[in-house]
Image (cartoon, rainbow, N blue to C red; front, side, top):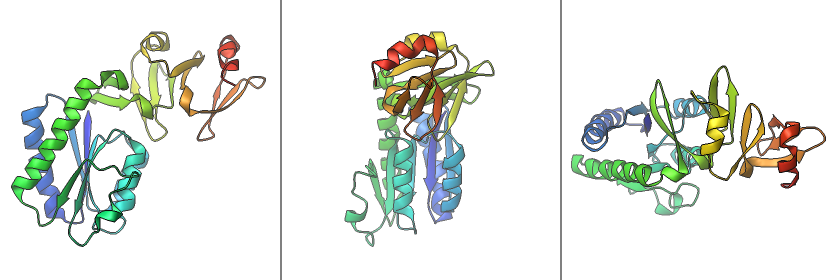
Length: 236
């Protein structure tokens, strides 16, 4: 499922965005889309702490803390298309920055045509990227629909409870498969370290061969099985 997160302190705007957004995706995409709208910034942070990656977002940066929220969203997904919602009171210097990398800009006062144009551009851009970027995206299918997860955001895969869980540090995505089968499909940046784990090499901070432990860049730890130690000795 493709997620669109909308944040604005104007509740009427949010209702209009959801309505227009649903109309646009129905014409452009056959995928399942989920629109989430918030007028409370803290509820957005709460959502981000517990839920999947957001694919497209529209963030009101006129509201207090809006720029910081846009930066936080960018941290969760480097591939996200971010639409910034602003007005002439906000200097471009404050939001044209690498920590946000916005794809679009909506300036108040808004018009229906302008919103349609920007949202259509964002949806088309994302859909085209999804189609062209299959080598960089893991497409998970489960009961919630199809969820694209950029390989760059994956820290490790874990096998438990007869499922595989993709861990991004922010969220987990379950799906049915085996690690043996998944291992054959993954790009070169992933290594099997245990019968229950596959880890992303670029998220490894330290390797303790004698302790059979891998420390990740968030200081969490994964087990390292004896049968895989020879591979990891070369990474030290």
